[in-house]
Image 1 (cartoon, rainbow, N blue to C red):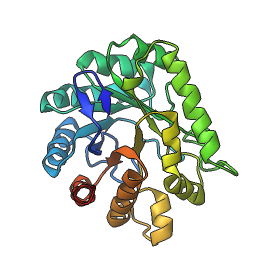
Image 2: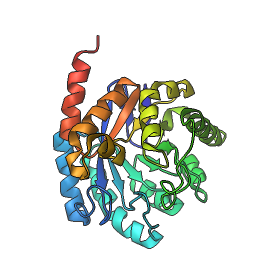
Image 3: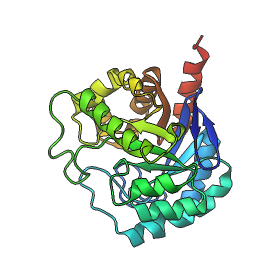
Length: 275
């Protein structure tokens, strides 16, 4: 199982740990910690020492209720970090939905576009399709960051998530994008209730019928805070690690996390008991 990206063919036979690098002042759990290029690069290097396999750099917070960031601000935040991170020798993913940012980071050599809108903004899917090799992660999101938790999904969650992801894959493959470039993310927390998020975790393996590797993004999410009583996202490390391991057990091949060292250790234990 290989994930084709710009510079790397990522071997997904072992679950991959994607370290989160938020170049933002207002992300829900670590806003401001990597708000400058120097701080972001120190964080990148720390995540790699902790065992990250790839890095995901984002310049715009997509927490519930967050306001959109202007194109110029996002470029100003992201481009210097991506330009420096390319030299670290690991796959670099960029968390963005703006086609202009996609073009700019791909020109710098970024390996993966990780898009919460699943390439539904402007000509985003054309940008990705025109690139010879870049990887892409298509995520399910209900509504938009401003309203997704105000009016969350109702009823069954697995079928509409699967249908949405299938439609987005079909739109991309119709543009002759090779299927080995695509990873899918059910979008934990993006317009789902707490109960629906845990249904997605319990039944995540059913999404494997779509035929693509899965990414799971449970790290420090509010649903974990609800079931543990931990209001502070920084206190949700243990719950995040447990969710990451359960997601891998249910078929995820990439886990997107803040707490890389703890997650990597837990997955080494999980790997040791696989026969």
